[in-house]
Amino acid sequence: MTHRRLIMSERITAIAGASILLALVLASYYYAVQTGLMGLRYVPSPESPDFTAENVTLTDFSPEGGPTTRLVAAHVAHFSDERMRAENALFVTLDPAKLQTTLRADEAWSNDGMETVELEGNVEYTRAAGPAEPDLYFRTDRLRGWLDTYRFDTTAPVFMRRGNDVTEAEEGMVYDNIARTVELRKRVHTVLQPQNFHSSTLER
Amino acid sequence: LSTDRDQQIEVHADRFNGDEVQQTAVYAGNVVVDQGSMNITGAKLELSVTPKGYRKAVITGSPARFKQQRDPKTKGIDEWMHAEANCITYDEERDTVTLEGAARISRTENGVRKDQSSGERIVYNLRYARSTIEGGTTDGKKNRVSTIIAPRTKEAAEPRNQGARLSPATNLTAPK
Image (tube, rainbow over all chains, first blue to last red; front, side):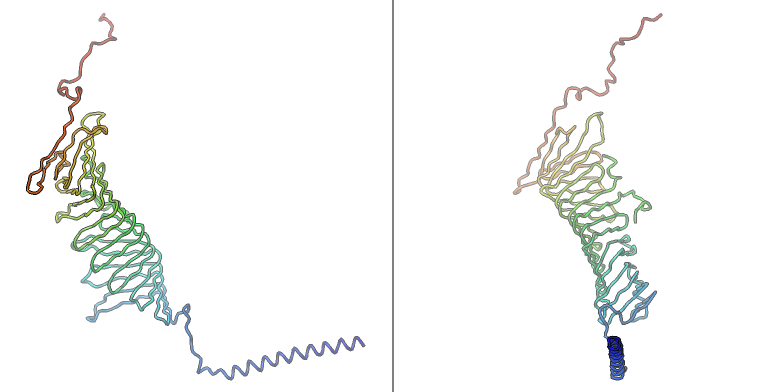
């Protein structure tokens, strides 16, 4: 009697498991049929880009056809909300009428269609020497820039070299390349070379 | 010291504003300027470059202070020039320091003040250590300058060209 009851309960268990499996298969098939591919739409998330590119060189041209700026990056990702991210980014101005400037960083973000850029990691800015002014170089950890007005600011420590003279500031800088002014804040230390100094011995 | 002008100029301050178009650099807040033994302190420093490329530094303060060691002339005497004024101008080309507004300049030997002059405007030549003092005018009336020259001590007063002082030998034996 016990033996027969045991066999019956096993049979019931097997039948129940198979029924559940069958129900799952039928439900999946039903949903698969209902979901038309036509309606499928990619909903971008802030984290996932809508296009990416490797080893990029983007060159901007003036209305007259001359190159004005160039962006070189190892990796670029663009997001649907107009944000753009570049790794190992190098930004160069090519306008022959102006002193060439370069801006380099480990990572660059633009959150508003390249109106402003946020640079992070080994940020270096250089400007070539001009007829009346020496070359300019500065280095910091992060920098925010307005590419249309060429204005940059940071709250991080800054190392700046202008010609032979070197200046360090502990808490930030505002640099305006159009007005040609620079403001440094907190514990500023400058070393000016004497008149008879030869620039070959200088630290970069 | 005469070697000061070949040394680097170091500037410390709280803030800095540079203007490449005007070719000026303004340091503000606890400004300290060092070049060799020369030291200038003040509240604000305006550094500019002359067309010939020489620097000109204008330091204002209440007061702005200046000090510089003189080339040693007498062994064992550490000679310094000290000065203070509302405005100190260092002209690298002419190698002069101009003191304006309650200007006072003094000379010390081993920390002891020897000579002192005061007036409205003092021009001190760093190369020749020569001062020109002007009293200035107040309400059209000319002010006077004042100078205090410390008396020379007896040893220092002796004429220099006397040469070494001789004294009889004490340990020579009689000739054989």
